[in-house]
Image (cartoon, rainbow, N blue to C red; front, side, top):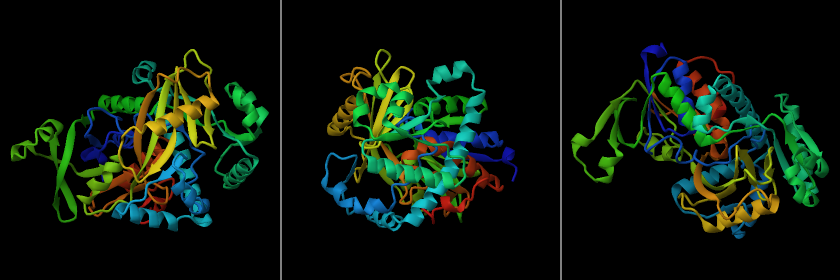
Length: 442
């Protein structure tokens, strides 16, 4: 296959879709991107946690998840809430999730995701190495390598985390991490001084990065356009034209005609390409049905607040509060606070109780970070597979591929996933095994 003579259409202009589009352009493909929203990165990628957590990829599906289930069901204000549903998607996902909650499977998933995480780090840093300062400033990237510190409030949790550090070190994948005392945590990040008395210690990883996800989407859009790529926004996919096991065209409608509720055949455009890549977040679940493929995805609803910290005392190092399961990332003069998982509520409504909890917990950690009365709020659905591994695979249509299911690690894994997808389309040997990232393994 000579990519220079081939046209690929990427569906989705979030961080995964745009990373995929840019990586394919680097291979010489003619690339078009189709997006339902009015601009890049407005949905799941807009205001997520901003941490590039390459070394923190342990899956949600592990043995303690099953023993914690009663607590999650009964506790309405905890970091993880489950809203049981009888929908087929929820039931199938939950049963498959339970089957992955073994030590052996959790360890294997950790190994797979560490490999993908470190590949992502190498690829993304290469993309940003020669970025013109004017471009990064205009996009609002706020990218830097600032390290990550996960803090713990009880000794048992710290010891368990220390065991995970030892396990990851045993894999010899270059995972540099250190167990710190409470005093050492404050020495590493002085903004933690107000909560030192509450800390048992922490895990510090110097190689982690931070970046504004929406800013990165804007930057990738500029790269794609500069190389001659096409981006089409406000465009909805209403169907697909198939010939045998191949898709020959997508049926498209502009959002304006969708809103006018017109069904005129003249309003539908058939958009042709040689290959198609579905990378549309949770929307991929319905889109893939058009290609006779079932995607085992469920939306993990998360929340964030962003506040001005220019004149406050905010952490420079990225912080994860293990007890509350929330993250803190400083983006220029802004502090992003994000976390929580609501399972079974697949909408993007802002839940006032969850936002109030984020503000309370953020104040508890960093009371002088900024004005908590003036926060920007966000809610998004992170599309997750039961295993916790993304799907980077061919669908039932031989020229349609998927790059989906990254869960809470979409920002962290996007660049590496794009690399694997590009390898798959080019038919070349990958630096990582592809079997863990198939529909079958999800």
